[in-house]
Image (cartoon, rainbow, N blue to C red; front, top):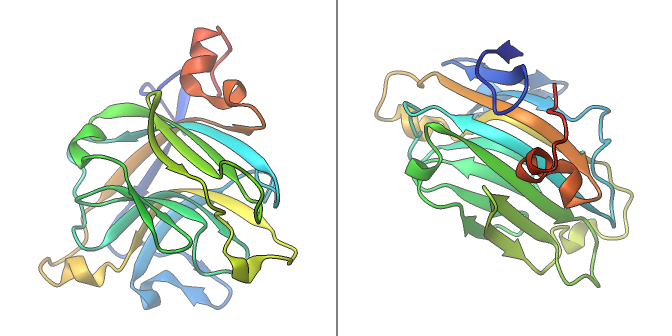
Length: 220
């Protein structure tokens, strides 16, 4: 946690990753798999998202103006995964051309990297983790502007009919870093700040700008 530079309130969450920083868990080592990360999961664990239900996420991201894109490699700044599955249901990816990656390997553009650097961006996401029968499964707003929308299930058919534990992660996660290192001696240091992290059943309860306009307190 850091103070003195926040979207709202007294403190924000600061993440930093340097060359060689790796995440590890039982049976997995990022560095051995062309990756590196520093991430947090929601608290309580798997407490935000439920199968067959819709949820709103609201938070602010600050990407510094000197952020170095990894080019053909990727920097992921938030993602939702089903426990035990390798591929995310959705994932925000920032490289030369930022995009959302969905579980069926389709994409949605998030605009140019220049529009994300050097400012706080307020992100609001709606995600429904059902298997069918809904009109809407995903929306992403940045600073009140709708950037992405999806009307087919996020959950792939291979996962239907099974008990699922869905988890939200955020921080910094670099993948396929060897593609950057082909032409560079080491990975750049990345620093990303997050603030106002919330999840709930209604947009007005988590949307940073809506809460600010309503006079609700910051998340500290």
